[in-house]
Length: 303
Image 1: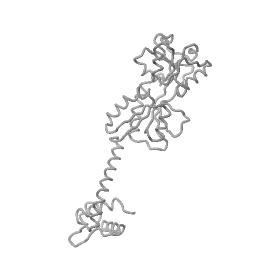
Image 2: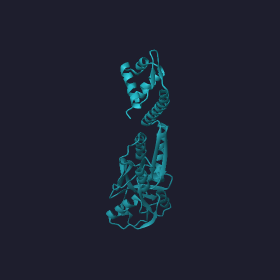
Image 3: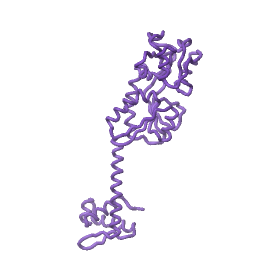
């Protein structure tokens, strides 16, 4: 089918005004060109759309049917175009975010609140899930973007770095480390250690730190959540090695964080989206907001 939007607009102008001359003035085109466009449209449809007289142009039955249908088509097209413009201007849409529980609780609430103040027409959905579920949700399109730390080996995702986060030592306020400026990995050799389970990327980095320092890793407790580890630390049951952003979750606990050195082990907190899928205007706007809040959570020396 070779019918164009412009032909439909020309046809509707003639149908409304009942005149080729008045329609050509409205459309800003020469009358012969308009007449030819309508003849081409009639040829394509294999029907006459107008009965032409010396005084007036009148719709045929087929023309009236075509007018009713094309009026609706153009209205729907206008709505679609307006909708896309609203999306592009971030006035309407949906943003689906997946993030691990700790980042979801300490970074995203304020970031989402600021984002929705700026873009009240965009509905935000948040899923607080594990890293594997985040990656799968983004790959499958169930989430527009994901927040967290991800292995370089993960394929099917593109990363936008937000902040660089170093591992820190967390201890209770009565610990021998409480007043120290820093702690080294070797200092942990005889300490009861609270770690995350081995399905956590943090745990794998902790193992790297122990291996590099040539000390044995013998966890006193292995837990799944950072908040549980912090609670055990507060109770004096040991020390924990956790990301710097865990400081935000320890503010109301009798827990302190110390830079962990020799070696300093860091990783990037990133926003991800699916490879090969266009990034929505809402996601693009959100990246800048969440980056600011993520950076506020990381001590300056860890940034």
